[in-house]
Image 1 (spheres, rainbow, N blue to C red):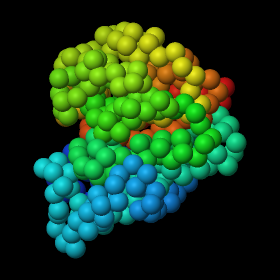
Image 2: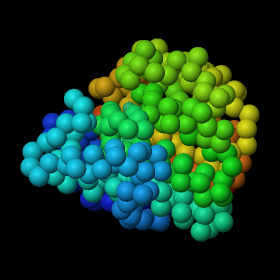
Image 3: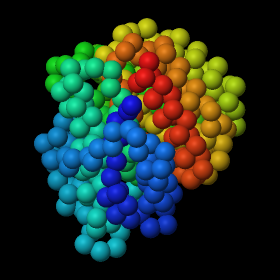
Length: 307
Ligand SMILES: [Zn+2]
């Protein structure tokens, strides 16, 4: 059994005619309610400013709180939009990501698995810059909370979203405790993610050229991520984006449904030694790609939790 943190509240973060739409969370929530209701379904809690400022400066946090419009839309950048009810989603997405760590600590770091079904995504968000549909870096805040708790010594974040998680990489590129590994289309938005970006030896980038198919993806992911990382981690995150699916309208990587099972499985089999897992939803903009990609990812997470 796994734990799924989800909320209907994410349907109130209205972005209008935008790929990061309410429709996405409807697809995800329907899948969870129809096929995963036998798992432990949990409501996220609301993050406060102090929690968010573990990663983002308080001036930036205040700027986001003060930029929520009372009507219509406000644009942090051309891609990143707030509407009157967006703040609740921002705070639940951070709160839920941190709730998973708190629950793992309460359970003495046992091999528990959490999936956080939330929006907007956060891996593009820099320390003090909203970017790529998101305003707070959910995974980075959660991982920083975990390290500061003193209950974890080495954390790995595996990001298989089709875009490079520039925000997460930059936030942790000088860290000795938090490792970041990403496969992504390159060159592509947001521009970062080349193989020569290695941080303190804690960054592992696996660039994929446009048109990359399943076979090439698997071979590159094994060579540039799985075979290169030889540390023991006591907590593993997934930045789980499903926009490398062949149907996705925003990118040009041609992964099949089963590749999302494969990528989850190979990480868990090789890098997770009975440790807790937190997977956090990032992108995925074709509704079928999102549905089937997520379904395959969850299957591999459930198998791990049952082992
Ligand atoms: Zn993406």
